[in-house]
Picture 1 (cartoon, helix red, strand yellow):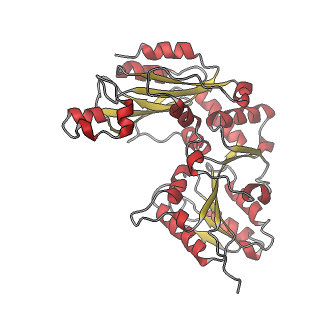
Picture 2 (tube, rainbow, N blue to C red):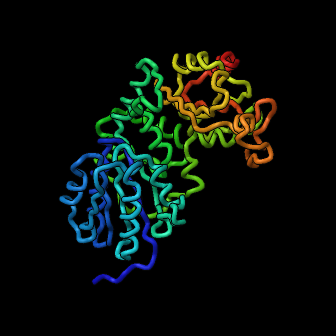
Picture 3 (cartoon, rainbow, N blue to C red):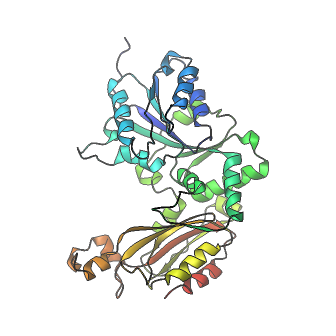
Length: 384
């Protein structure tokens, strides 16, 4: 019987959209185990877990024979508890040096990270049992490039978050935005122009992630698993829109942020639009849905004259626009007698400007060849 290990085992999570090559990458890693004690957890959205069967069939070493199959479901929703329990049990067994998790194609890395960082109702986190080593997002170079190009020619669509289907490219973007490592896979199926474009988009979305190009998931285990890359304070804020938004002061004018060299190289620009007056809803929607030339990504908070109590949240991925309602503005809660002025959190006090309180427009725009002055003028014209 193998002696137990005393440390919390590192966990590497493989995310990525359907067909990106996660299972191929996982199998390639497991073949490099060379006697080391590794475990793999595989999830699938199908009723039959094909990925788990493939991994189990391809396991060639004693170290990689422990393949745990999660039930039908996605680890970003109903089966998160199952994933946490499975990883905790593997870690508590004390027999594994590393645990690899392959998520479904529709899983969001942020949800997985939260299992390690946010306490459950019992006051525990998965981080009490295991250490999140890295969030790895795998993308199919040709597919990602094709989806990006599709956004340019499609008619802009408005999605109601309650009834509309989630756009594929938005999910792909969010998987890239919250990642420590992005593996651009199947590069042999993409042209040099496509690869350059994909890397340009990845760097524009996530300035922190390490990027590797590969074919058929051929990644050295020492490079991918040899050191921890996850940092709760950095990874979860790695998305460029988060970093730009956080750098902006509470006032109306955003600071000038020096762009890194690689952003200069690829021509990626970003800016924050801030205002206190409400938007006229139809004017704002019309602008967003007409399309902003060169826009790659837009996210942030907004409010409208027609719905002054609701904290709106905008998400633009290519030609698809999503409007969500996150919550109610603190100012609205106070005006409606549901909260008192003195109860405002310190963060809200810092944002407070009369007569609108914490209501504000605070939107990040990221793109290539964006005409910032023109976009700002167009947004100003949407103010009521």
